[in-house]
Length: 553
Image 1 (cartoon, rainbow, N blue to C red):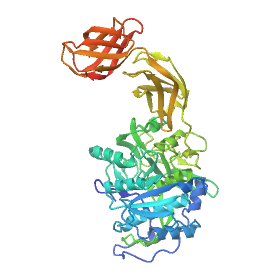
Image 2 (cartoon, rainbow, N blue to C red):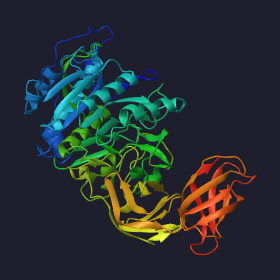
Image 3 (spheres, helix red, strand yellow):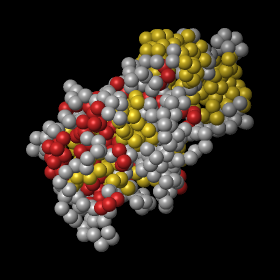
Image 4 (cartoon, rainbow, N blue to C red):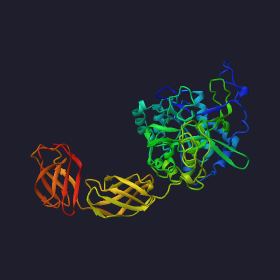
């Protein structure tokens, strides 16, 4: 159902046989179904469909946390039934594989039991273990479905050392509450060097398929700091697995968050018509309840549905699949935001199953709701195949730059390889404006205030620094005092000054009383306004440079 404001709903959909739909007066509990529902997906099917290995050397070092609301008292026992049925190795608390804590990270007290969220918990725990058999599973139970409680549980998972954190729930983003969502994201979902996955939702494009649901994308999937996971319909004909967009999967352009560089720069992103806004989703996996998975949950939902074996779908199935794939692949690999790793493999042969058919709504000629070749909203980059998409690329190389000297405000060409992922350029400690011209070249502007220093390039995969230093030929490095009345003497320090250098305070010419190559003294003019100080040379090094900070009269 539609969650209350500032609260979340789980993204699970239970497939109920029409012939046995319960009457309104059905009892709250019944005998658990003793056998799986035939014809639906098993752990072995998922491994076959997504070409996944059963084991990897690093999987046993990973802890995949699942964040849910309320308590599922049978979570561990139900996982045992699931494992036995499908021949998986046991995952128990006694063996160190399974652990359950509250939103403070403590074993007790646990929150109250809520039957429907117990079903969600069974999905998350069992899907994680189905995909990554040797990963440790950490279940963190929030006191309620309030977003602040769920956020506390996320932080508890991070403190407990989880390397992957899955969030199979959603709350509609409401622009009127933008400050709440941005602050919540910064406080709980921005955990660099940890994988954070989130369900995109089960109400179609912009939630338009669910009556009463606020129109828009969902949180936390809309956060640029998470891996948003959409849902597909997964089927096989006995020989070949195929995926199409599931009509219920969530997608759209966020009304609150901007797209991270790695998403914005991927080929075909512009076709979503999201502009600079964050697009949901990043990748996708099975989510259609009609191609759902067998789950065992012995805690009654309380609505008359029988407990035991049942079939579940929704992006609550898709998200933990991708979370566990990250675990199988070794986690974040020290990458600040592992979604960037996925995008670095966009278009790479064999990295993804490209979902190219199906839709989840109507959005004109945009691909925010339509499958397309390459990136699209509902399926993202597609479904990862094997573990290639989770392998971080090498840090870009910096071959050199030219010219090696110049005045601040001038352009410097930087050459190297794999420069398309550069997110920041610095001259020493000063950030510079830049433009990526190609994978081998970018152009940066020498920042105001620059001194002799190395150039560094920051990417989601690390920082690379030049061997040589760039040397400004004309630059204002500092000035003092920072403010003063007209007639006040201001000392300007830097490089490249001349006896004939002119000084202005926010465009108002000033009298220069003293000059040397590294120091000027000027008198604050009567017409000065708050703004930068500038120094102009008519001869080499010729040009006008500005201070990094402003002078206040």
